[in-house]
Amino acid sequence: MLGKNFVDNCLKSEIITYPWAHTITENHLNEKEFNNLLVQSKSLLEIRLKDMPTHKTTTENHITPQQFKAFNIDWYDQMYDISKNVYENRRELCDVFPNHRWFDDLVVTAYIGVTPPAPYDHIIHSETLSKIWSSVTYITPEKNCGTRMYTESVKESLAKEVKWKPNTTMIFAGIDGKTWHSYNSTEQSNRITLNLFLKQKQGVKEYFYP
Image 1 (tube, rainbow, N blue to C red):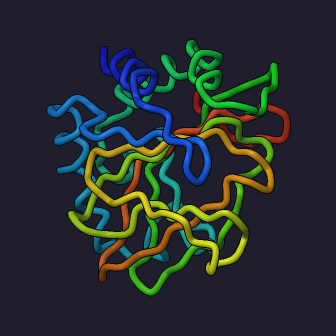
Image 2: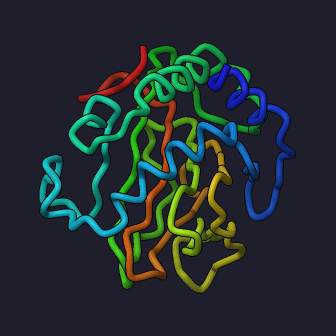
């Protein structure tokens, strides 16, 4: 039911066209399940990336569902249900966006993202070519930077910022050279998100579903 509701809410969301096609869905996840995830994710706010067992000398850390237990996160079944429904409705989810990419060999990658505190600033990018559908749900803290959207690959072209609000999801279908976006941390704690992607299987080392 959680996964079906996730997809249904995606498909009901209004397509916002400026500066490029995307959706913003507040209260996206079932309240009880989101609060469950929120409580568990708060333990990640103060953790240092270099102390995480999944750290690989990167500036951010992705905790895949297979690694949830190492962080005492009991949300594997929920992530599986969402990922399964996203995969089974992949065509419908993508078709709401104009000019989306498509590959026949699609998979779902999913993780909890841990972004370092301020002044961390992720580079502006239009999305990896293998990703055809991108979803980010803001979890915790209460305040932070959401997603910044640009018309070009430079900060001066900033057109909009999706406001950070827990349990709000931003979704878009990446288009090379158009869907320029970035994010940064504004607080003195980590920035925690729930991320799902539909990606081309070829070249992907790890994926979650199918």
